[in-house]
Image 1 (tube, helix red, strand yellow):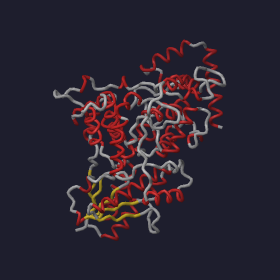
Image 2 (spheres, one colour):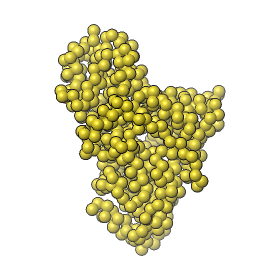
Image 3 (cartoon, helix red, strand yellow):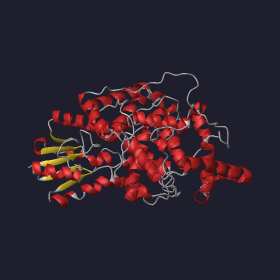
Image 4 (cartoon, one colour):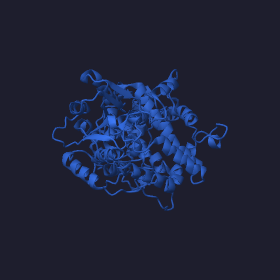
Length: 510
């Protein structure tokens, strides 16, 4: 008996559910680099290189562990270009009696997988992906009957399920579930030694992939010049240990801070490894909790980090699968403006956007506040088409897979789902950016100016955004104060803001 087991590029885990209970001598593992997956959006060059190199290294590790691996490279002459096409070729080569696969992370791929049994007349077993804390059934049971699906209450259930940061009585460590109020410090005034993440020199496998990507994807966004990702399990674990030892203690304090020419600060840079399968999320959270128990990290940092993993990450996955494929088409605010070209090159006079986009093009990385309150905030208040924004985020970040990126972008960032995820739009004027970064001090625009040619565009667009969306947002309780402030303004001031905002947006479109 031969069992054919396809393994996808985000399933690079040695304990994948498809492998569990399978005798090695009976199995052939199929790994496929296919054109369809590298080009359905114009992925950042470094993102493609990271995934392909990690796949090739994982294949070597599987072979060393005793598995037979049939590996199809992107530039193989006979490559069919799709998972289904490559599975068809593999069936011809191996004549399997069964196919076992772990369910994918995206609706698009799942739809293709569910057609395999009928198409190939081979029994197909699709197993649940057990690398997550919460199953689809558990999330649906939690969500059933709730008017609002707020992450905080879901997160508490995940804490109870995992036992993370609970005391001996099953209560939250320190008496509170959430210490986010302690995690909003602006960047420090005095110079601090900011730890840098480990950089991994490309080995022969990675160099070969970098050459392939440079040749084949020259028209894709981003640079390969700064490539330093871990592409092996052992190196990803080194990055995990490095973060816990050198950066975790300050992560909580400064997780929302932003500094010019400092793309990483105290962030872990572990999400690419979690989302492709090299790191296990629960193991990571337990290692972080251990640092707290040993007195090596404060509670606010530990809780804040764990909340991002077993809270937010699990929550957005649940939303993605519960809402279905049409979630991507929602546009509650009817935003239709095209995405500005500077999102691909960073060539803008707005220093905050130049910084966030520039480092994105260099590193395929930006931290969550840069994504939410710089690039996302601008797209929101400028009325950019949320599907175009979703496509951009999916393209440019190494950790972006649709299940995690789409709810974060469409729901949290762009409010296009009408408030299913977020209780209010994450829109702000330049004041927030000024308080959480040093960006405004380097900008040609004046963050204190409310109108005029030198006024920070965020100041103009924030009020214009509220004005043009009042019919939809005016009854939102969390926006009651800004709408009261807007109502108090003189009609002349309101018209000046509308005129200046229109002038800026017209120039943006041109």
